[in-house]
Length: 336
Image (cartoon, rainbow, N blue to C red):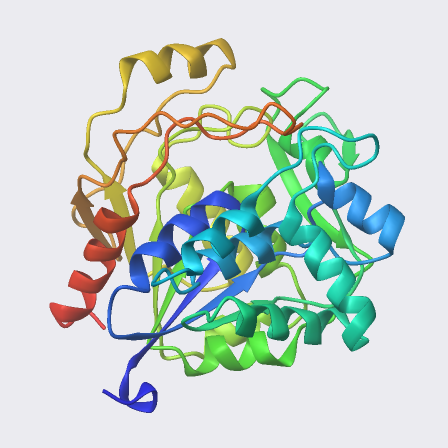
């Protein structure tokens, strides 16, 4: 089937969750695009921003790798782009893919073109689109009136993580990437998540004109509910709390919510409990104005991270194949 005749699916988020969704969806006959947050300020992204003067590349890199060709000898190239240096003064903790894109930006003259060229190198199936090319930072206001600036300080709080977030903003305001607006407007289905609500999803939706694009698009909007709450962001949030925040930001209703019913690892849950994080309780009612699709989506793998990775990573994740199958089934059943 020609690409022009394929259903257009846009995944919006950042980090591991979007990687998981894209890697599964690329196995299906779809026209895929990923719209990626550009406000990350932690780990190697901090160094990319401070030392190279570039926008953060880690989420972009993960999406490029997720959509990359896995046939023939391409597997080693995918591993190379995800490789994180564990030795070397000044380089430990950096990934090869981030350094590659920094170097390519110097060669081709712009970060936007470097992303396109990296996609060609990895022979990606689809497009990876930065939601903005504006240098911007995420700030969160909490119920006690305190304000925390920068994404990584919200994601890994030094403050009381039980405090509720009452508002988030981008400073300075971000100019939208026209390609991102076009992708939303012409999509058949837009997938939000999985990903941290306030640091992976909302930074995309806070960019100027993005909510208006959602309000005008004819696409079905599907939200993949998170598996776990997040200390510092969604402490004790139920499923309905996640939906409420998204809809308030978008200025429109979600059409379909995808909820996991698979069993979570008791071992992993014990580790999460030490960080005040628990499974998201599904309190969505069957008579809601949106459809609730319940199915097993969780991976059986407990994930570990590189010893040189300074950031906290998810132990429990969605399974790429199960998630992609569920999303494709939504379309096949005529929901889209």
